[in-house]
Length: 422
Image (spheres, rainbow, N blue to C red):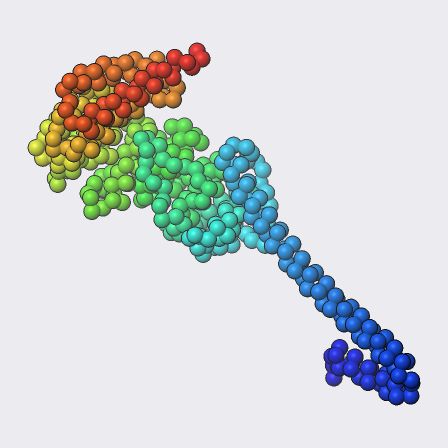
């Protein structure tokens, strides 16, 4: 039977004090003091040992946590450096993956990952993606096996956002989904095998956003090599999507798909886009409008002007059509006419017209911060255009909008005057 420290001490104390009555009182007091001091010292030693054991255990746990934290932070830093171009991964460098997890096992973990708002889960997922990159071409068979199952796991509900012009976001720290994370892993691994895998997915996927991402990525890796495959995929999907307010997914899909056509300067769907420009419900197919403007340039002005004056168009949609003219306002007489029509159109709210006027300082310029000679000429043309409205506009809000645009255009000229010659 185990005996506690207190029981043991009490027993020893009782034995050692049994002979106290045989001593004089002063000696008895002295012995008691010595005994008490011994008890205190014994208790202090025992307590110190317990504290030391607890401190050692805590230090061990802290060291393990610090190592895990350092590993995750290193993975995050590595991911950021790779994307910032601070380190270059060469396809010939094929690292041996940790014996603890094979590429297939890592993908299984990523399938079960729940990122949400957990920064810890996010760091762990990024570390796992980095492990796949470090595995090099050894990871590609497992990646291909998952991608060809046409499954996905969403990580970010915001997705990739809408396409801007002819560009789509292809770089991210946290991917919007597992598939996009594996696309990025393949891109970072690089080499002919990774390129072949991305091309295979491009030719088989039925998702517009994936077609846009893969077409853009492959264009970076191998310019124009996958042009025909990308255009065929985009056109096939465009033939099966429509733009309706009730289906925002399809609306964004069309943005992505038309952006691919614009990226390759493909004008084969101009006539189709013209026919689809005004929808049956009076809405303007803005994806088609952007494609027409990108493909035709100033030649899109007659189409925009005709659609603006079409009685079928919802008045709230006219601002989008007028912005085609705004892009060329000041330099093109037809654009100036469309601009004037929009400024005087009382079916548009004053706020919408004011915003439209203020944007004379941005739409159509190549570089607002460092104006080119073409920008400076356009700025002068627009200042001349604004001068024609000084006595014609009565609404105070529209006057303020013209003044704001005028101030910004003059600032652009002043900025160019003090910039060193290139």
